Figure 1 (cartoon, helix red, strand yellow):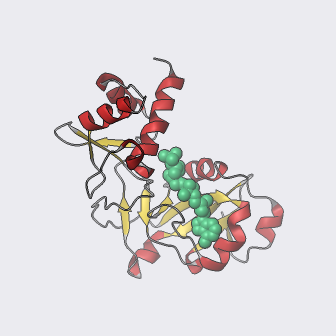
Figure 2 (cartoon, helix red, strand yellow):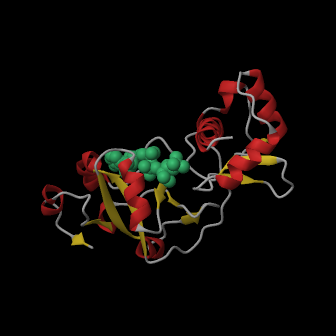
Length: 199
Ligand code: HQG
């Protein structure tokens, strides 16, 4: 199986497990888990034939560890990124002092005015490193990175959660708790209209 085929299956599983399980008649439990047997059966019935070994290979080789298996190996769920309403049931956790959020310059005006909101997903996604945040931002256009004062937010009562794959999640980030990071990806026009510039 080629890397491209594994990647295609990963995208398909993300679509089903994060966004549209009902598109193949699959019902996830309240914490986002699907029975692997049922998932494979329903995928096959809708024209996507994936065998069990291939599914396990996708889970193991996925570079962002997007999928989690249950302890008994019979269930699977997406580690984060859901738009459907499920509760990952993660325990709140104290975050590091700083986390990063990658976004695109075209969203900046709105983000500076309103803060970060989950938009179509369940929570705002934050990264441990600037490098990861740049990659996340590039998915949307010209990347810009926000440096989030995560620990200060936590101390103010905002809850943080660490997904199984190392992505940090929180419900929102108000404007007073981030600054724009100067990087090669943030052009000077952006950095110059930002009052609190950090590196
Ligand atoms: C932006 C991928 C305007 C936000 C990634 C982002 C991540 C606002 C976009 C995971 C806003 C939502 C999630 C506001 C936030 N006004 N825009 N007030 N607040 N936004 O894709 O964080 O590869 O839903 O900055 O790596 O980009 O799929 O979220 O640009 O971990 O596994 O609205 O998805 O993982 O975009 O990405 P998304 P995200 P996977």
